[in-house]
Image (cartoon, rainbow, N blue to C red; front, side, top):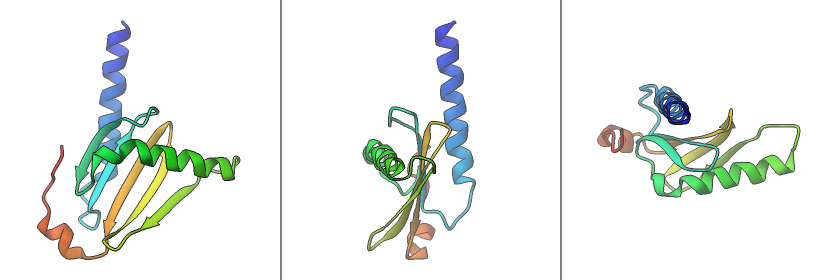
Length: 110
């Protein structure tokens, strides 16, 4: 029975990751982490090897305002990165500054 609940949890997490991306061509990539910081789904131009770092960052930000759920916004030379925690899952959106990056990139992950 425990294995069935794990499968159900994973299916729900993967659906959450898919719905975050939602086909919006302005989003270069999206990923969803579980409560342990492990990537359960990623699509587009986003590196899932850093997934645990995003979970750590959003949890540190939450310590600054314990009564609020923060959105962490980061900007690099190439993209804006938005990080937020929803229902124990960390959701990350990578929005390229140059829209040509999105048009030239296919889905690198499923």
